[in-house]
Image 1 (cartoon, rainbow, N blue to C red):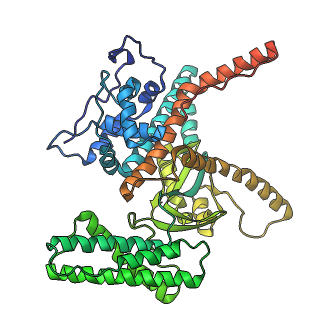
Image 2 (image 1 turned 60 degrees about the vertical axis):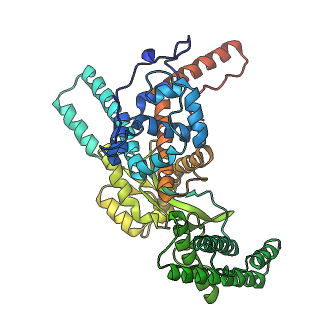
Image 3 (image 1 turned 135 degrees about the horizontal axis):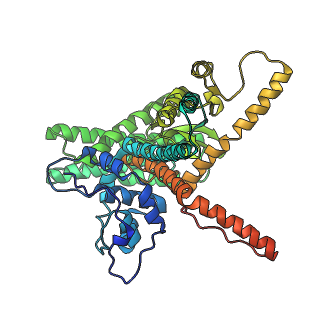
Length: 500
């Protein structure tokens, strides 16, 4: 059942606390509460809620707690404790008065992530960027009305708005899952241990009747440890270790299937049954690669706990293969746009340029003048489609050119390609500052929700800086420079910001 409150923002002066203190209206959580699109939060979070049953957690508290968690890089438990101790955070979540009670149990974060999903968070991101553009347009209209202008000026402005403007930056990255680096022998070892647990479970379910099936677990464990302790392993030793673990795992799977036939039903609980299906597919893949003497296969499993994760060959220095989801993102004016594509399988990002362009138009009302991306985006098909829309794709033009045209084109291309540093910097900020390279959620749906929330929080912080801190910081810098010129010495202190 959906529980809602008035989405209108409470005034900070009306917020009640048990302390003899006056709440600071310039606190960062107070400022952030003014720019979050809470009405869209209510719409997206309540979409999957029923009108019947026990009342759920308020949408603002649920999504607001997720924003706090991602913004500060806290664990689920620590986030709940921080909210309980901080009255400003409680104000941000829509509390009317300070409460010493926990907002909800930390395990509830799992259900919040599942309920949100990547699509819903992307719509929140779109609502935030749309709100920013609406405020900008209203300000421009107000300025124009004060200056005055006839119908001719309005017609000129309408034509200007329809014309392609701005630059769209496109690039792809990997949001790495926090898993152990996969090794074929170790994967088979993990699968073997889980299969042994299943055999023990079935044996106890049958009240330990008859002799317990042989698993050779001690011998299998000893063989694995002898292999794992070796620092330098030859191809022959690796292949021998794989063969042994395949034999042990294959025997265990045959025993499990035989016991299931005797019972006439699958006795496993939900989690164990999922592991049983994953282990069977893992065994099939590893056996196929061993027999064919190859080290690749379709939809290769690299983690039993997270079978949706796939290896992504990137060819980067020091990190040729990454394990996680692949994301194609667009950056416009320093903001992340809606995620163009998020997939657990590798894809060619060059085939999704038009989607990014259409999303740009949906947000701003006009097409970009220039699209800048990696070499993979520069294809004949993309150039042809974008030229028909009046958009230029940054890169080398096709066909023969004079030396003068070559030099001019190279100069322009170098200047535009330098702008790609911005999107690489944004990816670095997301990975180093917000742990986009250490996604700890196990389910694919919760991981996607966490990734989308990271981009939403980064946009939220940037918007807050522009609205509240940028003009102030500019004034402070000017005053500091004047003071330094007058006094002749001293080092100005950096201005605090909302960023971490």
